[in-house]
Image (cartoon, rainbow, N blue to C red; front, side):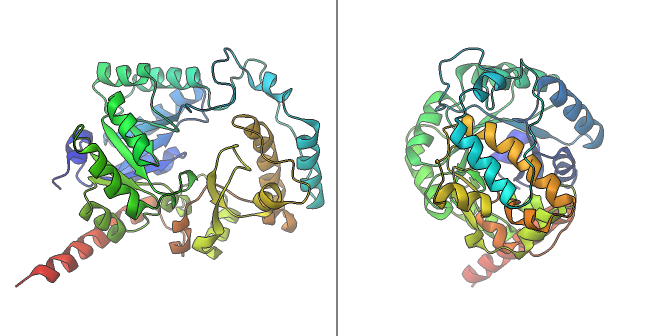
Length: 377
């Protein structure tokens, strides 16, 4: 396919798949797409193990990694902030609200033991160390979310001749990213899972393309709600060079999600994917659950803490929820949730990641054929 993304990344079909699961990353790349590993939850040591595994299972096909370095975070400017030091900032009211909510559904809240030196969630310095690890492997892309990548990240990309991508959710953000020197824009509409803005993909993609055109030629990947090849073709008709996808891979057999969450995805409608601060402290689209309702609209809710403090609460809570649900606690299922976009309404079964890539290709080709037939003589 004649797309600048194909040329930049060494692929034939410009379908990028973001996943926290190495199995999905490898399967997508083997099938002709481009897997991107979400590395935020890793330490340098664990990321080294994951990338070594991908190298051994990707059949020499290209892949990339994604980190999360927020520009706006409550601990901005502080040095050497650890998970332990942040625990002391979580108020008794927030702890009691979490404990009582889980207890109501028969779930015991168990705190995971944390190394005293474990960095805070979304730590920028850790992210840069993860990039250092990544460049020891044949990665073909590095990406950042929640703000302009730090100058050091962009310089790393140039030094290693690896394109730097950045996620944006608004036109003004895209202009700043282009000025900073990123190589690829991932233009993510509000339909997307995880942290997202308020503008739809259908509006945001052409808006960004128009805004950056006078500044610099930067290829755009459309993101947000893209679950089919026809949607991908529609976005490329608007000027995108390819698609960045995430939620569609959560229902694959290789994904990191539980069987219970997959069942909930299949049963969900697009309206069940809501934006809530209840998991990270920033608006993030996820499957509606008792947890999101309690934090967003609960009568006694103390309100979500700012990022990264809310993650101090939610990590142990969701680990406890998932354990309880897996052990057979039917009530716990009502709290099971994960980041997922509005495209969840299009999920009707569990498939392999390779099969999803093939469906994207076939659906894309069918859509192009339909469009060509509209203009045929």
